Length: 586
Image (cartoon, rainbow, N blue to C red):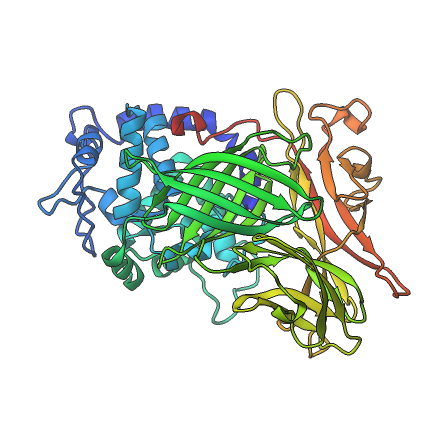
């Protein structure tokens, strides 16, 4: 997930006392006890846009006490908002937490499903911010410093961009922030006062307050009505997913995996059950799991599965959450499965319906080097043909299949030569009529490495707060045809077996974070944070937090000099308080 959203937990922990005081004050000052507004809210005055009527009796009965309904069936606030399942879940939890709304869990699930379906996002609207529910660790691209100040100072930009609101409701959201967190208005939303002697702002610069600039951006980027939503809402279908699905993907620290998922609809209509089996070629290990899932808004898969046998390592699969997007033709699912105290472990997943004919999922290798001979390659798939000969298998120009070692319906082992003059680039894998596009790369040398993630966040822990680990990977790249690094034509070659170490990120005199923050496994790239709590061995007895460089070093065969790359690793204190009330979502 975005780093700022995790760091915001530290900022929010100071809110509790102020929130209690404000709530006590607001009950009298904002809504006098004899005012009708004390019981119900009014629809926004003169809304500039038509709302989306609420036609669900359960939503009206449970929410209508506070959200007034007009003659068109619009409910205040609700009819002028669209968001993701996570957004609606957060809103329902907030009603329970702050407004003493009493909901039976089954009713809460029905309300969540209705609002996600009828007041949700189109796939095109959800895709740009899908990393947010997927809990990916990324560096967001923020359009301006004003938006950084107004929004990203406390949470990920994807949080507001996961919502669609009317102009009036965006203003109400600003007011809600000021009411709940009064200091944001002076510290974040407004410009510092002009002091005597300060230079005037540059000619042509935007002199509006940061919050006004952010509001203009959100009105444009998060408008209530859109062609995408109108199109999707009209064509949305109930998901028909029963059957056998093929799955493939990668897990940092573990490599590629292939397998199958059996999906069955629950007879009561409450979603689907799943049975999963995965194989990891790197060590030929297998994992089996079972779970349940619900599909919201016709495409948003939200599942949870548990492995039949828990692994011993922190990054082994355990109870896994699944966030995926279903294609419009309902033939593919793609997204991320994740787990860990901070959802720090995860795997990129692609699923496709099993066909009557042959399907190639991929091969065990990420890349093959030119001039390599007699390399064993494993091709994974489904219903692969029997009695294969080398001529039935094609890995592209410059490669030749010398021998078929073995063949089963799900796995074909072959011996491959790669010519010394083979053209670098991505290659397809074909077995007769079945093709896997871009299944691996051919390269002649490695030009540089990148460490993923680039700016990871780990959390100290112990008892009772769990540790937040970090799995690092060194990804190799070859410069593309332009011979320049970090350009669009570069060829990704996959992770390499680098050696890992920590180096000090010097921020203060006598910086000693490297001695206290934790340990980085030299071979696997798994960072294990230290224990939480005051450490008498540190100056002032402070906690073991700090920031360091995580450095990867790799020397490829035939190369004179090793390649290095690094990422900036922040090791923070635990998230002592959880504001999302996970028990409400059980």
